[in-house]
Amino acid sequence: MSDSASSWVQALGNQTLPVLGHNLKQCRELLDSSSASLSDIGQVINTDPGLATLFFRHINRSRVTSGRPLISTIDSGLNLLGAEAIRKLLDQATVLEEQVTDPRARNGWYRLILRSYHAARLAQEWAGRQSDRAPTEVFIATFLMDIGEYCVATVDANKFNKLLDLQRRQLKQAAELEVLGILSQNIGAEISRQWGLPELLQDTLNPAFIMNHRVQLCSIPSCLAYEADMNGWGTETMQACYEVSSDLLRQPLAAATGHIHQFSVTVAREMNLPGVRPAAARLVELPGEIHDESQAPEQPAKEEQPSAIRTLSTKLSNAIKERQGANDLIKLGIESLTKDFGFDRCLLLLPDAEKKRLTIRAAPGFARTPQLKRARPRIDKPGLFASAMSKPQALRIYDDNYPRVAASLSEDFSTLIQSANFMLFSIAIGDRPMALIYSDMSGHAIGPEQIKEAKGIAALLSRAITHAVRKA
Image (cartoon, rainbow, N blue to C red):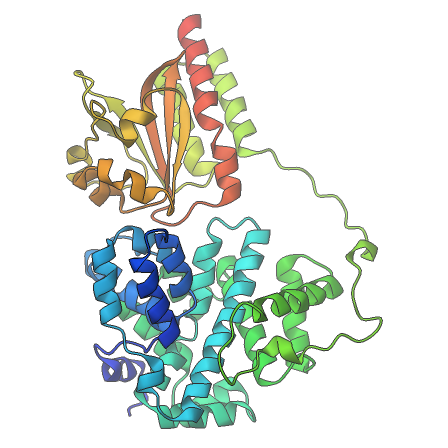
């Protein structure tokens, strides 16, 4: 085997990473169940690197060559597939327990999967604490950070076993260079690029992004989970992990360490694989070492920053005083969505003269393509857009409810947005809707704090425009 990253990916070829047998069985049972949802299937896929990469590879295949945004979470991907397509993909999977017959190698697979899951759950929890816009995106990027090692395990079981042995005695990078002649991170970066795996995962495997905050939300838990699994919780390297985690979480060192230990125990109870002890099983609480966060030194109060909704309210008030019209106020609202609320893309949709369809009048964040003219959602027939135009309101579409509205989205509009996660704001004069504003995060999930603040936009803009029109 050559020591280049591309040669490892070429050796893997069209072969898929093997999947855990019980996960494959559970996915098929959920598909056959009348009460199960796509989210239930997604939860299973999110515990299996083989299934996760199988779905991402299929869903993003055309996006890699077309330059469209990559699907970044399993739930978003499943919403673009029907049950039959999911079933066919599952039929392509190979079972780990059938493919890996060497007990030692199979045990190594199990250990690597548990370690990946430990890191991913830590990363997701940290992202949620910091109001990250998409904690599930952070989860899957962290879960698949060891994709290079999974590639080695699939292609060359002997080298995988040697790597496991050396990692217990040497630093991870030194062991990889001795056995593989290349770092597994480089293999992972190449396979992620070729397979169209999520962009955040590609960033975590790119040294150029090492200081990026979201990348650190993935990489630090991954280092921590590795050290805990391979060498234990009391090493000098682990102490350095605690200190870096403390800085990232903005917590005192003792509080951050206690949180890591407690949450790791919780995660260890979520997944069990035969013959493997989770790292948290080696945690021992000694008398007097349980940290009481209530006794942590009081932190200086941070200066409160104005919320995005208050910022927009101030801008609208000033615009009304300057006697700006409805179009100017809507423009302010769209600018605020991208600058203050953090959305990537927006569409301003206005009814045509016959009030049968919506036409796109502005599209910040979208590429200038003919699709902008072709995407004309209907409002004269029941569906999402007719409902949105019925009254002033803010509607959130996300992974769970997208299947219920997908049928009412035209093919042109679906092709344009390529997203199952977005918000629609119905803007009105009085009680009469006059326009819709579409906003999204380029296909990524929208964070809970962002949703909470953004829900007031429709009412705020409607009040401002109504006031401006009556004052004119």
